[in-house]
Length: 212
Image 1 (cartoon, rainbow, N blue to C red):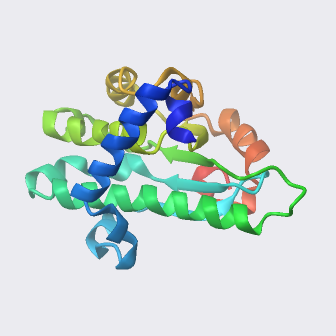
Image 2: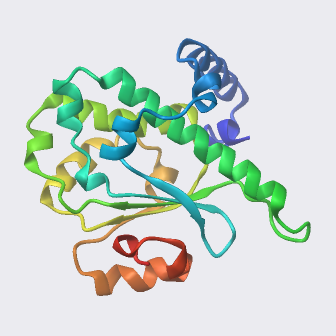
C-alpha cells in the first residue's frame, strides 16, 4: 500500500512504480541482503541503531550521520558497497516494522512506519566539495522515495548547520512533499529539540546524543 500512497493512489503510476521496484530488487539482489552480516567496515564507520521504539511502539532509527565520511567512500571507490549497506538498512527497517506489528496488542493500531533521528553534528564542507559525495548522499533519499515510500512517520534532523542546508536544498526536489512535511530540522540548541524528541520517544529508548 505504501507504493499507492506515494502516488496518491493513482493506479497506473503505482503499478509502474511497483514494476520498477521489483526489477530494482532483482538487479540489486535485495532479497539476499539480510541473509549475511553487514560489512564490518561500514558498520564501524557509518553506524546506525535500530533498537528502540517510539511511544506508539514503532521502530526508531538513530544515526550520527554528520560523522559519516561520504567523500571517503567515493575516493576509495566503494560506492556500490555503500549502496548495498544502505539498502540493507532499509530492509532492516521494513523487517522491524513487520515484527513489531506482529507483536502488537490486537486492540492497538497497526504499526506501518518508523521514526528517524539523525544527528548532523560534524557535517563539514569537505563533503560538499566533492560532487560524487553529494550525489551518493542524495541517492539515499532517492532510494527511499523510489523503493521505500511512506514508511516514515516523522524525522528529526538535529544539530544542523549551514553546510547541511546546502545538501538539504538539493535534497528537497528529490523528496515528495508529504515526506518533507514529516521532517523537522533543528540547530545546535539541545534545549530546543530535546523535549520534542522525548515527547515522541522515551529517553531510555535512544542514545544521549539523539535526545536520550
